[in-house]
Image (spheres, rainbow, N blue to C red):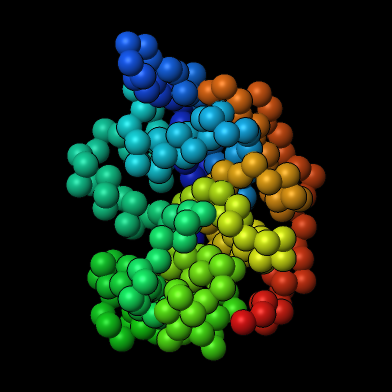
Length: 249
C-alpha cells in the first residue's frame, strides 16, 4: 500500500479542446490538479464545467491537447495505447452513474469477470468477488442479476467490481445521481472507506453538495478553470465505516 497522503496522480497544464463546426471550444484551460492516497477529492461544478473531461484526461480515457499526467510515477500519456489500457486495468477503478453492468451476469459474475482479466484463477476471482460484495452489503445477493436488484444495489455491485482489484486510483463520475438520498449516502460512505481503509486516491466528480461533508478536499471547476481548491478540516468517519454490517442488503 502506498503511503497515506502521498501524491497518487498529478495533472499539470491540462488543456482540452473540442471542435464544433469551424470553431474550437476549450473545455480545460491549463488546469493543474493532484490527488493523494488515502484521501477523497471531490471535483464539483455545473454541467459543462469540464469536470468529467478532467477526470477522463487524468484516468487515461481522453488524451489532453497539452499538459502532462503523472500517475503512480508514470508519465501516463507518453505510454503506448496498450500500455495505458494495462495501466487502467492494474491501477484504476471506475464507477459511473449508469452502473455499466451486464444484464445476463449475476452480481458475483460481474465482479469475477474483471478479476479474471487481471490474471486471477477462477477460484481466487470468485473468493475475492464474494468478499468485495459482502463488504458492500450484498453478501446475500451474490446470484442476483441486475434486473433483480434495486438502483442502490446495482451501484454497490459496481463499487464492489471496482474495489475487488484493489485499485490505487478510484474514479467516480456522478456516482449518486441516479440514486435516492439514502442510497446516495451509502455509496459515498463506501467511497470514503475505499480511501480511508484501502488507501486509494478517490476522485469523485459530482454536482451534489451533500457529498462535501465526506471529502478531504473540494475542488470547484467552472468554464474549464479551477476557481477554488480547499482542504476540509476533516472527513468524518461515520458508524457505517467502522461497522460495515450496518449497510442493508
